[in-house]
Image (tube, rainbow, N blue to C red; front, side, top):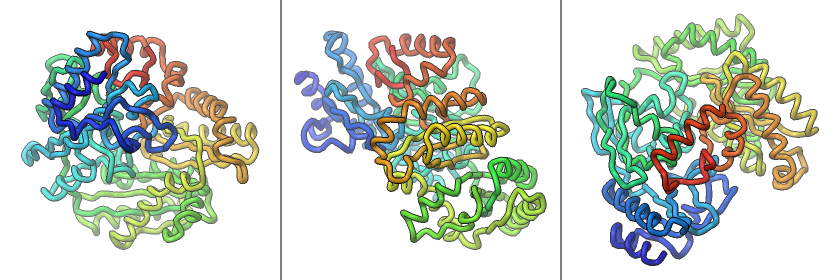
Length: 477
């Protein structure tokens, strides 16, 4: 394939076709579960170069149909399901969009911002804020994840209950197809009933149908005030009741509602002792909630305090604190965001990113906790997540004193089946916001409707008949 690599060097410059040296930043996934091998890491500078690279690879594959060549699109490489790193064949091109990191346009009248796919999420948030607007997609990896990756996986985060997933915040896309053509769909229109809404095919497709190169995103006015509260709750059901009260008292002002189990917070306290975790020692769960008010801080505080008074009266909250400053609020959010880091410091673990109807959450947690403890005595359960939208990161840690790597090797399939069977029984999804990647591909084949899978395969075959784009992810052909 040396001739192909020489062509790619001509297109994007030899300095941006990487084949030698340490490529682990592109070939190892964020969780360090796998380390692939790339034919090359190619870093185009603009959409036209992306299109030329894809067309060149498609032509080469057409001339050499059995060569095994394929393309893995990659943004910030922060994914959790091994969906954007190469396999071990050494035949895949990692197409990194990191150089395409420009905010192209901010349209204040239309309340939209257009950014390239390699633009880091935090930079998009900052650009919006500097212009007096709010881009509300927010997640722990926002300092390194990118717009293209967010849309490719339909990322969620902490504000979904108010603003929806990444899909709901996107009005238009620019996409390079598997044939190397460019679809210009960056209209920014909120109403456009002219046939199939193509952007929804590419959002959440994890790069298997094409490469997102830019997106037009929704903006919102900056709130006049944002207040954060931390509450101790006696059970998951009590947290669900608190959520109902929060909807009643705060209405559209409610922007975040996070549930955190005691053991998850214990890990933060253990591994990040500088973060002082409030209220967790004597309660099984804590809730972190946020209100963004369009009127004033005084109005927001009155509403939030009214909510907590009502919750204390009904006993769905046993104690609570309200952040008195921005720094206090940031510390509370840092505690929540450090849970995955603390769990990683504790050792390898079995991660689940599931969703069930909020009305089923208490029953799901109680039943699945009991089943896991019975099947694996001593197992430690790290429950936390976005209860406000029904998404729980239901993670399983090895028993104290058991080697985490051995625990994963011996028990991961059994744990996954037990958890996913319970999710299905409660009408839920085995992937709420992380995607399918390669880690969950076989599970998807078992838990997804055969009719839906057939439709998905038909779409993949129609748009990417060469199977050039990110094969072995989402669907097995």
